[in-house]
Length: 164
Image (cartoon, rainbow, N blue to C red):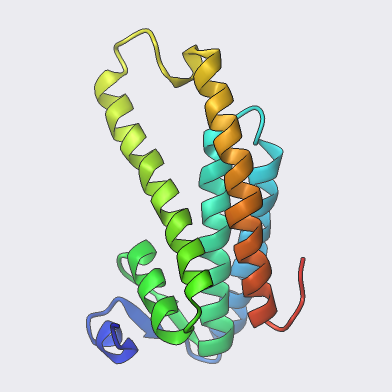
């Protein structure tokens, strides 16, 4: 495991001072909830955005936990560093499995975007087929219910036992 002090020396993580802390907490309390709401609101019409928003809900609630419970903020390589810090501070295999699943889903979509960029001149794009929209719809629904909701619930317990 990576030690937090090494990440701080590398500039990937920083300690939050007392004056900044309320602003960070407020931002991430609102941000994760907005992303969670958005992920369910667009699940049928824009399932890929649902997955992306669901992952960002997980990412932001993790950053809320790091700020609120440890006074830490992520500065560089935010996605990978957030997972490293969580792994170091929270010895919970289930949480790590869920955040890594969320991150992998996000990376898959990012790779899809890179491929789509190369293929954008072709007529058949993701939204061009009913089948692919239905497939992403299923994926989004499973991802939100099985990964995102479970993860958010577990982090909320770590934040003080409150489930939103």
